[in-house]
Each structure stands twice: as structure tokens, then as C-alpha cells.
Image (cartoon, rainbow, N blue to C red; front, side, top):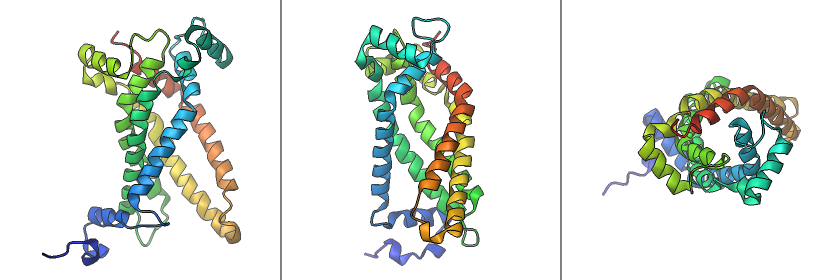
Length: 256
């Protein structure tokens, strides 16, 4: 039987998609591709878990599901939630988040790496437009995976949620509103995330190259990139908050 392993098919003889897949199967930095996917998934779940109480408060403020009018600030929202639902109320819906975040981050990493390898060329190995496009494609794929569980999570997070848990929410939404209800906010989510993902990746790659050119001896010092990323993230959050409110409202309509 002939050996069909990648070593018998040079990358330059393979179609672009096959070459990208073969490239991803190889190891780099001591890890193989699936290990990067697993690490990205774990990191995503840890990130969302750490910020989950804040996300719960944000959801309740955006849906006005706290006993306060007008919409309360963060401090009042926290006190009101603790008084009504107790400390565990901050974590209601975290199971749905875990079910969605892991696969979504794996999809994000996969699509970004494959798209980057398809779009970058030997003549332009650091093309910002290619990095931006790969980031947008990754966002579209990741949001498609995460949006249904994000909808469940949001509905469990709101005050006086009528659902007993993840399974009950999924069952009732399917029965009362249909499958499309899980994707009611998808277009808004992509519209919110895609442009800033493009800016993020293009800016990150450009900043990394600039730092290496300015100070090659300090290429391992990531403080500059950390500060730039934090500033970009804060700006993106400020600009996208209106769309985030729209997304939350669409996800928490409860069939009305």
C-alpha cells in the first residue's frame, strides 16, 4: 500500500487548502496543531469564567432586569443581584458558557490559522490585510458556534429568568420559538465583532513588526504590545457597547 503521508506531497504541489491543512499538521514551538487548539479552548473558557460575574451584571443592566429604574449602575446592580439571588446568581448560566466557549475558541483558532496560511504569500508574509481578513473569517465562524449557547447563557442570566437550566432553556426555546431564535442576534454579533477583530489583528501584527525593527534586541519584551492591546480593547469595547446592548435585547426577547 502506498504511503500517503504529507512527506510524499510537497506543499508547492498541493492545492492551497490542502497545503494549509498539511502545514497545520506539523509541529511548531514544540506543540502540534491540536495542542494549540486545546490550549486556545482552555484559555477561552478560563477567560469567560473569570469575567462571568461581570458579564452577568452587564446583562442585567442591559436588559433592565433589576428592580431599579432607570437602569442602575454597576454597584447598585451588584447589591441588588446579591440581595435577590445570592452570590450564586452571579454564576447562573455558566454551564452554557462552558459548552459554547470551548468549541467557539477552537473554531476561531482553526479558521484563523488556516485562513492566514491561505492568504499570506512568500512575497508578502506579513500582509496586514491578510491578517485582518483571517481575523474576520475566524470571528464569523466562532460567532456561529458560540451564539446559540450565548443566547441560552443570556436568558439564564437575566433577573426572574423563567428557565430552570440549560436543558430546559434549549427545550423551551426550540418548542416555543424555533431554532432560528438561537441565532436572532448573530448578524448583530458579527457586525459588532468582525470590524474590530480585523483592526486588532492588523494592528497587532504591524506593532509586532515595528517593535522588532526598532529594537531587535528586545523582541521578547511584550510590554509595548500588552499596552497597545489593552488600549485597543478598551476603545473597541466603548465603541461596540451600543451593538452589544442590541445583541443582548435580541437574545432575551423570550418569544415576546
